[in-house]
Amino acid sequence: MKAVLQRVSKSSVTIDEKIVASIQNGIVVLLGIEESDTNEDIEWLSLKIVNLRIFDDTNGVMNLSVKEISGELIVVSQFTLHASTKKGNRPSYIKAAKPEIAIPLYEKFIHQITLDLGKNVQTGQFGADMKVALINDGPVTILIDTKNKE
Image (tube, rainbow, N blue to C red; front, side, top):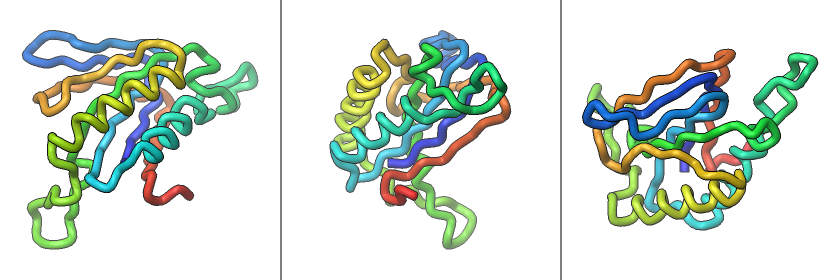
């Protein structure tokens, strides 16, 4: 799994001109799933996201997690995170999981991160044409790859 985390002061997801998710102060997670992803990837990534200390404490130091600040999450599926740009100018998405594999993993991830955060997580809609609006606070943007746990 690959994830792009953006610390936001405000974010929303719109589908067909209707807002389906909206948060204040939290994290937008763009999530890419590949066929080799497992429950271990889901559990590791979920805990990493909810415990990552990327929010300021009273001294202005990034020392608090989204869980500690009672922040919110939006998780948006994004197969393009697995784009390969090695050849030519048209990205290949061969590493991205097909929907029959990706959807159950995406749903398991949503369930797991809801449990780990201790509150409901908002989402986009898998496979939909979504418009994601956000105010990146900081800016803070972090890339995480469960296949490269550095």
